[in-house]
Length: 180
Ligand SMILES: *[C@@H]1O[C@H](CO)[C@@H](O)[C@H](O)[C@H]1NC(C)=O
Image (cartoon, protein in one colour):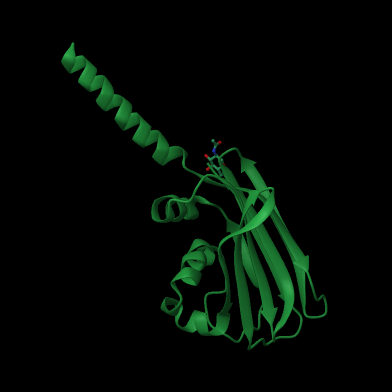
């Protein structure tokens, strides 16, 4: 009887751990791109596609109309939904040219960059003389980072990136996701 009880408790602990690991998930819920300056950069597409229940991806393409671009800053801001989206933990502006040259110089920016770099052609430093593409970014690579490294609270989030060239905000991207 005692042995059975112990086994049962062990089973419960194991399955709780297992289920927590498996179901602690990032899921994209929406993506929006705002074109702030259509003479400079044009959002060609920006969408979230649901292939099936477990596979969704985000694709974005931005045409640069005045290449090459030699000065880029990116504002990274995380929001959590409470009553509306409220700033949450991160709001930083990074010199992208410098960061892409020395990624380890900014661990927070590196964390966010690692989430999407494998899907993006922003894999070199300035200048940028080609369209910027984020191709079929899914959240599988993000899951581990968020849930295991950061242990974020559950809820709905929005991650905003402001693409600032020559100190003018040209494009705003907003990625909405839930953590459950
Ligand atoms: C969802 O779609 C992906 C890509 O087509 C596929 O690999 C995966 O098996 C699908 N999953 C389910 C549950 O249908």
